[in-house]
Length: 94
Image (tube, rainbow, N blue to C red; front, side, top):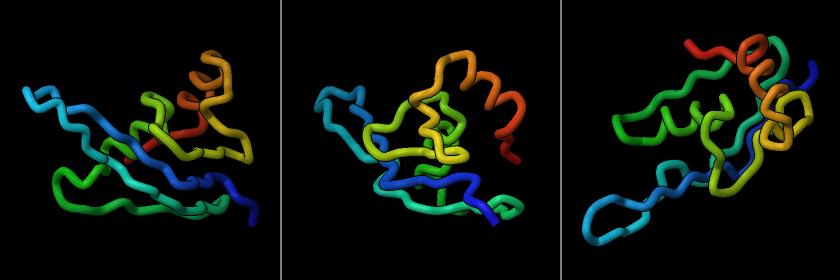
């Protein structure tokens, strides 16, 4: 089997909008490999970063650090047109 999706050290940091302005890690150093024909289940308690991680995997928000490789290509190095095509034809979440 070939590697379909590889996530390396994926992190997302947000600044709080409260008066303190403290930053927090929504996703911290996630790593996994998904082979062609495989599946992945993401579980966790509320506020654990599941939606943030999936939003990055769809290319809708950029990670603070790390890489998302789809078929060996970093999705954030793709043109907007190619990324849109990837989202409409190759990436879906249930």
